[in-house]
Image 1 (cartoon, rainbow, N blue to C red):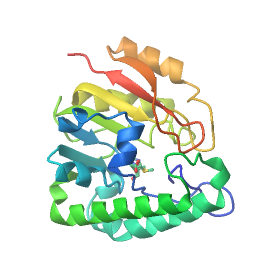
Image 2: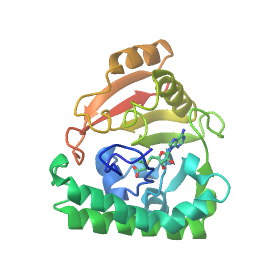
Image 3: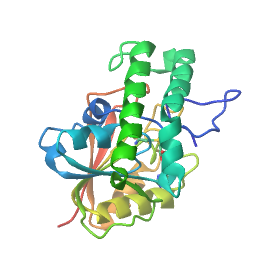
Image 4: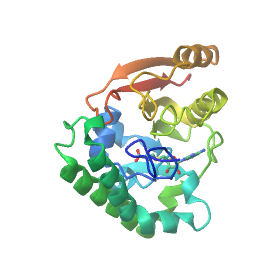
Length: 237
Ligand SMILES: C[S@@+](CC[C@H](N)C(=O)[O-])C[C@H]1O[C@@H](n2cnc3c(N)ncnc32)[C@H](O)[C@@H]1O
């Protein structure tokens, strides 16, 4: 699996990139307010994002979980996060036309921001590893309603070619189980696409049957061209 900032090899997708978005990107992707950042937050998948480190430094309460954190893999993710940011940036430079240069003004700014975020992540995993929990969707190792707000970026919908409908449905049900109020997901398009997940209407209907009301919200962030919407799922009380 790869990040939607890049593909590798001879034009196809194929290698994993554990990406490192920053608090600034999370704020924009998920329309997060200062009040949101005061809530108990789960970031799933956390990847090598600097979000957990940066919010914790502000006094917030965030847990990141990811399948990449099992066993000694967290140390490996931390050790390679900056190199992965470099690799992702090389792809972005080679495919600059596929991106909107508004949030980042140019590939150099993207590079600096992702490297800095990777460095925050790596330092925080060493200082406070308990914030980083190994987990594999669609099952999470947390009791019901452990978090107020659950964030999920660049896994569901992004990899719709690899992850089937049942995975999407079961993962959102599980993310909602551990939240008291909301799950927010971004983006709603897959790698290489500029249109919404084709089974989104069916998914929202099935979630509604399960008692989860959803809405699509435009956000003030578009990096991958066409990716400027999040899904907000309201958790039943
Ligand atoms: C593109 S990264 C996104 C990371 C972060 N949210 C960001 O935006 O920078 C996708 C992440 O999904 C993780 N992942 C893949 N399958 C997973 C699963 N079944 N459960 C949890 N995490 C998974 C990968 O390890 C990878 O770190």
